[in-house]
Image 1 (tube, one colour):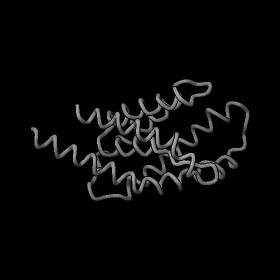
Image 2: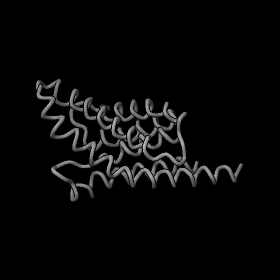
Image 3: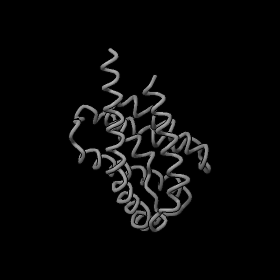
Image 4: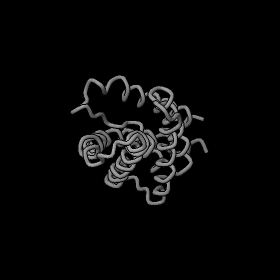
Length: 169
């Protein structure tokens, strides 16, 4: 129950930071994707079902606030990314900080590609290389830079929750 409450608080805080605060610190009109960092980190640390659930509710929140034509697009993207990244939970290590950053970068690349397909390609905008250079790659760099700090914080929260659940059992 505590973990569920912590997940809800994490989703709300990351969403508020991403949508309200990071508009002031964006670089070249690019903001880091905090919800993607949250989903990937949780899926990496806790597994497929945690990634799937957190991804669905994070994406649904983004859909409800910023969704354009396709309601459920973000929920589907975050949910699939969380589920697929959850398979990497088998190689999870407490002291490894490089693999999660690589997974976050690859997940952001996949997220950006599918976002391009659904939002631009289906409307006839075919200049993928421009979109890749202008939006996807800078967002990956910015998201990975922010994830260095955010992943460590999420890792500490997860470790503390695991420690408390072990003490109670």
